[in-house]
Image 1 (tube, one colour):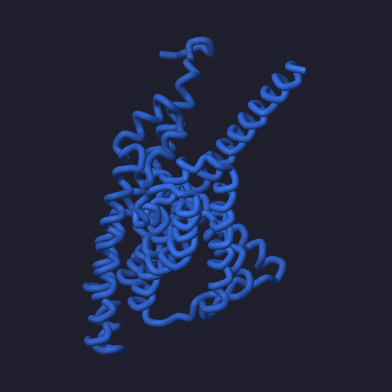
Image 2: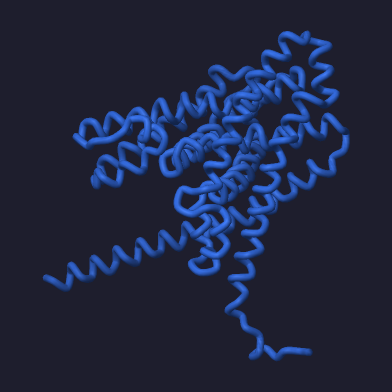
Length: 329
């Protein structure tokens, strides 16, 4: 059966594209879930783990394994927490997307992180390549044992989010709410600052919060060259950008969102890399990287269109207000 141009329902195309995009996001979340057992395999079962014992001894390796399993379990709990909210559980995002558009992706932490992580990864890679082309080197972490590198990379998100997001943005939020005389639970504010800021209703307070996010990002970028062996000046740019995005995610989606976004860059990516190193078969690793790149390209386009629409809507609303004010005179 053939269709003429007039018989084709073009109104369905945006929904089809949205479902394909959402399907890719769900697939990437599935790869994130798979990374949990992959991490256990790398650290406890693989030949890389046995080699680490031969080099460093069983006592040292078992100690760092103990640290790894603690943070691994914390990430698992935060991941389950992210599936459930903050506004929509993940299983309700597809229906909401069909009814209300792709903005529904931002109602769930994991779907938001998938978009943010994949887009930010491509942007940071582009910035790194651009900087390298003009002689601004990024550097790299010195190679040590693969298992110890993986464990160190896995611990960093939890540690650094407490230092750079909770201690800076969260603490300033607590201080600001205290100054304004608002009753609150400090632990809940540190867990998710934005939930309390709606009670302030002052633009100055919001600006202070955004300033703390910027400061947190700048310090995060500087810390990579001040305390991170192997990194060079080019790392400041990408780390500061990532730090600002992590700050925004922490403020609006809470501690689980910030930790899991950081986790995506460290544990998630590294689990597939070191799994490839362990079995010397790149099929799964190549597939995961391919999905991340495809979602990243789609996410950069989606976020660009979304930002332009928000900007146009804001400008249009401001123009209407100005015309109404002029009409009064």
